[in-house]
Image (tube, rainbow, N blue to C red; front, side, top):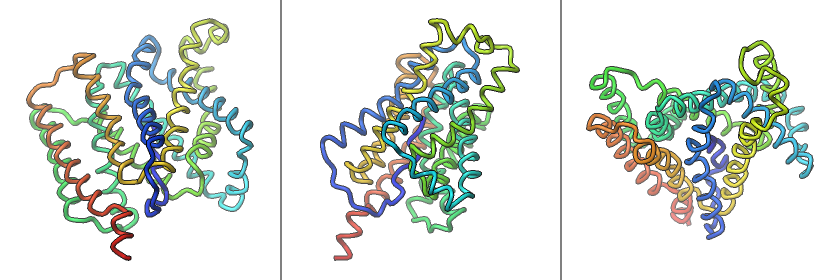
Length: 310
């Protein structure tokens, strides 16, 4: 799932267009319907699926970079070599996010995955406070408080820590935090990340006892469904990047909630995962926290702040 590089310069005022809204809506819809695709791969090991996703995403990105002649990142890394190590770290983090998500989908834990991506924005705010010493506004504190209470309710009432949700939320937010600081664009960063992870994936296939370890499998018709992981990963990322230039930051921030909402509806109404009163309480607190978070975000949106200065 990747809304990771959400506007590195949020203070810029962007005029919202219908084309931008449609572009963003398509991107979030694709991300939100990922369970439909990954459910088709349930016969494969989750790590095997992610190995394919990394390899085919890398190849798709390589084609994009060759066609568009996007090689500026080479000079960027020469000037900032430390970002090579940080990009490798971010690659490991997003791979962990992908692996957890696929495992959750194929083990009927889609509802937990949805909760993780609802919690993500609040975790991101908390990380910004800890790492960048950003001051949190009162409503943001309250929103994070509701998130903490929801986790405690799950621990007490359901007797288990929502580890899937927490891994997804923290890996997603940590990845976004790194992307926020990097001089690389989202596309360039993902190309470098996947390029460095491909050798690890090849090694894993070589020493593991999975279907993809057999060279003959890569030349069968069964490989096509796994190959789709590349364009399925890349297309929404490109659409999202395009939408950041056509949709105001505040509106795009609200639209981010569409992805976990789609995942939630798929889990409850299509895959019929259990949704009792305890889970309703957990999600209800998260939703209320996100409502407060959204109200605060809207009240402090860049366009309003710039108008106030004038």
